[in-house]
Amino acid sequence: MIMTEQCKKISDESKASVSGEKSGLTIYTRLSPAKPTEVYDSYWKFAATRQEVFFNRLMGMHAPWSSDPIVNKYKFTNVYRASDRVSQYLIRNVIYNNSLPNSPKEVLFRILLFKLFNKVETWELLTANLGALTFDAFNFEQYDSVLKDAITRGKRIYSAAYIMPSGRSSFGFLRKHSNHLKLIELIISKGTCALLMSAKTMQQAFEILKQFPSLGDFLAYQLLIDINYSEIINFSESEFVMPGPGAKGGISKCFLDTGGLNNAEVIKFMTDRQEQEFERLELPFKTLWGRRLQLIDCQNLFCEVDKYARVRHPQIKGSSERTRIKQTFRATIKPIDFWFPPKWGINQNITSQNHNTTDQELWNLVNIK
Image (tube, rainbow, N blue to C red):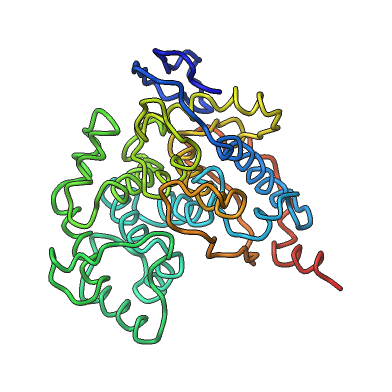
């Protein structure tokens, strides 16, 4: 049983370090004893197993990369959000691209352009047709034409990771991509970059983004995390969190009763408690080269555990109506040379890996009859 005291204090009493910080938030709340389900332990076991998969693949080990058949069969995002393929591309090829202008306004433009579509192929399509993607040379008609032509040819220009509202009611275009190009223009023209740079807290920066059409709580928070990878702003990822729909579903499966904590407070609780839980369950969790799980990572873990529990704990429904995991795992061809925001101070800790063998080649090796 966890959180058994009638009045529970959740606080940060550990030393801040370059590898990450605890939430920095102290919560005092009247609690009944919180009631975790069996999914609560699965949350930590899943985190350890999925991180084991990350490092096993990185070290060139043959598939399967874990002993968990669910993790081996289905697609789950990495434990650390910044380790996912799209985030890695954003960080290295979009934000910290030395061949492109590095002014805050230009970096913000690139982040918006990449993340509103959230698809590597769309970024590369625009680059192939238009050259260097900069706001100074931005032409709505040209960008709109390239994307419209891709749609006509049956190409998907949006990721399926999350659904972007069309924005039609705000900008009036029939095609969603046209509205999103206008949204980018609007955000830049309103001096948003300067406003973000003057924000004193992560929540204040969140409120700046949330005011724009089509950016509700979830999308504004996700976009804020992406901008925070850059040098435009520099907040701790454990300063503020905004739970998304998937995270809320995962929380409802991990707890019958949260003992008075709201969803954001539960995520803060999990972030602060991670070391104790891995130790309690005797799980050898390997951090991201010294960086502990942040609020955004624990929030995302709830999303993934919501999916994982559909197969592992089908009897526990929570608030989610979904009963199956849609996407199965498919090996990727192109390896990733992992690299993170320099301000995190972990890139020097990344040991050299052998990328001579791709995931597809490894997968083929273990599936030879």
